[in-house]
View 1 (cartoon, helix red, strand yellow):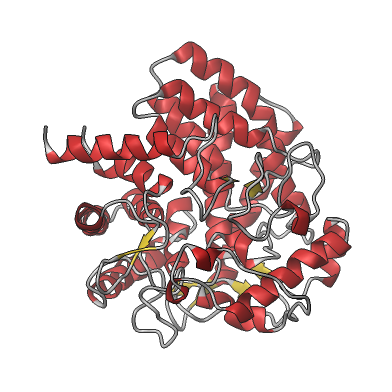
View 2: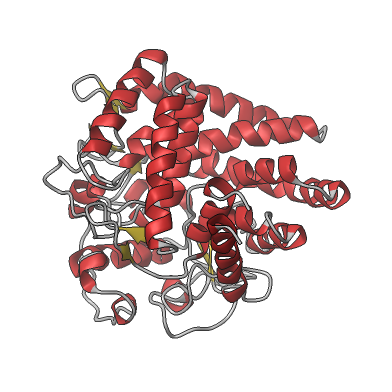
Length: 424
């Protein structure tokens, strides 16, 4: 058996191990529930060896969709005492217990990929036709509830919603958020060393926002008015735009028309028109924007490469980003670090402040490939492949040493390796 085949079998074993009966937990203990973008990406791995199970993963995720269209960032299908904050803290009493925020909506892009790879076309067609109305409502929720000013640049109300929880891009915006005054017990530090996780003072602010959403009874207009954290997250905007284009393609493929599809097209046009607001001519890079201070979040993070994935960078911007990527990759032994290694906030092992994440590398490489920079895409592929083969299936990886960090036997790491890096 070749090395690729052995690693592929190991990836299969991880997904089977983390299968909780129709949905996949990211890893046991640390993350015992169903996470939104984790499940979408994990479906790419399931598709490689169990096609019905890949579609089931997405169906179970969509089963927790709120009536307003939001797909929550966590679904609490079963009780567990190994994670905090749980459903009692969030207070969202829905048909499936959940959080009250979402996550980067990569789901429609994954559905398009699964459609292209499907061998069982009858199962594909039945599943996608049933799923499309919910996907449309999900995207319209983003554009309606998270873009009340009709700019095409959606707003994040919580760092967890970005998926890049403790990114240094959020530091200044998060400082404005008060700390909770009640006592709580984190559970993540029972599983992972504190040097690899966010600091307590950040958690204090994360939980204040959770309380705020509950106090506002999850009403988007009230949250938009009063939330002390409001950010145009460049990664979320880019992933949403790519997914919207992919969703429009799916609607055309399955002959789905109507006002909802027309609205998606209109909002995507707005995003293209206003994306320049997140580009800095000083740094030649894309940044998120703090809407309360009306300033760009100046720290360079890997999110700034994701507009390439969405086709939101013009030729000159793409050229700058290609040069930046090569310089960035040379600044740490393993790449691409989630924070520019030349930034003072860089920490190579602390969650989103420096470590390498395979699924983000995949998205960035796709962006460079689609922008015509195949050499940069191949460089990212090779560096990711080297990291994965040496250190296997950890949640993320120290950008200086390559050492695995966070959870081990991690579902989306295995799935991306199976989808992108391995040739079984």
